Structure formats: C-alpha cells, structure tokens
Length: 227
Image (cartoon, rainbow, N blue to C red; front, side, top):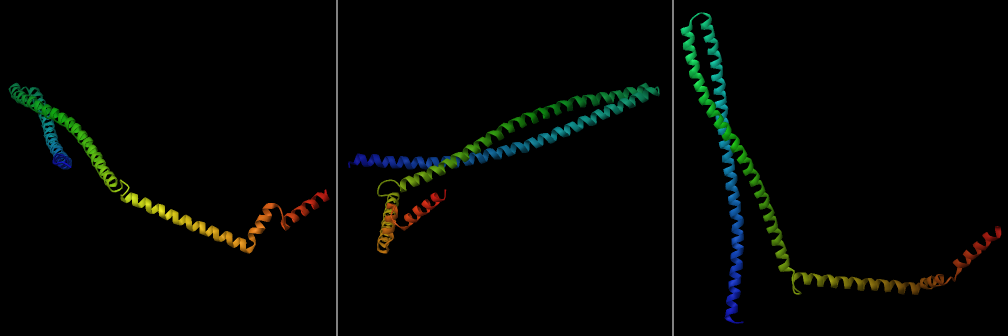
C-alpha cells in the first residue's frame, strides 16, 4: 500500500472521529440550550406574575378612586342641600383632582393589562415551542441509542468469522447431533420390534392377515345372519 493511500485512510479516520465528537457535542449543546431556554421561560413566568400583581394593584386603586368620587359627589349634593354652595364647589374641586388621578391610573392599568396579555401569549408560544423541541430531542436521543445498538450488532455479527457466524455453526452442529440421536433411537426401536415379533404382527395386520381380521369377519357374518 502506498503512503498516499495510508495518509488518505488516516485522514478518513480522523474525519470520522471528528464527526463523532461534533455529534456528541451537538447533543450536549442542545441539552444546554434547552435548559437555558427553560430557565428563561421560567423567568418570563416570574415576570408575568409581577405584572399581574401590579395590574391587580392598579385595578384596586381604580376602584378606590371611583369610590372616593362617588362619596364626594354625595358630599357635594349634601352641601348643596344645605345651601352651602361654596363648600359644594370645594368638594367638586377635589372630585376634579380624583378624576385626573383616575384617568392617569386608568392609563397605567391598561398598560399593565396589555403587557400581561402580550406576555401570556408569548409565553404560551415559547412553552409550546420548547415542548416540541424537547420531544424532538427525545426522538433524537432514542434514535441515536438505537443506531448505536445496531452499529454494535453489525460490527460484532458481520462476516463469516464473526460471533454470529460462530453461533450459527454451533446451532448447525447441535441440530445434526440431535438428528443423529433421533435416528439411532428410531433404529433401536425398529430392531427391538423385529426381535420381539411385534414388527411381524404389524406387517400381518397391514396385509389383512391374522386373528383380529378373522374375528372381525366372523362378527360381521353373525350380524348379517340375524337380519
């Protein structure tokens, strides 16, 4: 073999080894990336709970401001009923401040609400995507494991000199030995029948000769005579 062929074969081995290492690293990298993606997803859920809490707080504040407005409208009406318009005006001025506060808080509430809805939708998509990636990862790992087994079996049990070939040869030898034993048993039984006369009796019965046949003919004749 020329040195060029040896060098080419060596390059092929190095390339194959490099590919195996790269594939192994790719699986590890994918595992790490999925763990990081899951961690980011959990962080997103934590952020969502924070936004939801702030939205609920804003909602309660809106409710409190609306109650104050309603209460002060009642106070202003009471002042007017008593003829104290100046007091009613001052109360209405406070109501105006409440309404400005209500408008500002309403904007805050709506922002929290929109952020919450958007984050929920994005988290749902991300969670679904992560689930699909994990499923694909499971399939890849299972396929990799099966192919490793297949490769191991193929490398161990390929060729006439392999373990599979040796096992098949052993099975053939066992089958032949068992058949030889069965033939010997059959021959011994055949010889024993010949010695005891059983074989002769069998041959006579097969030819329709003997005592059993005569008895059968006598019984049949007797039955016919009774008719």
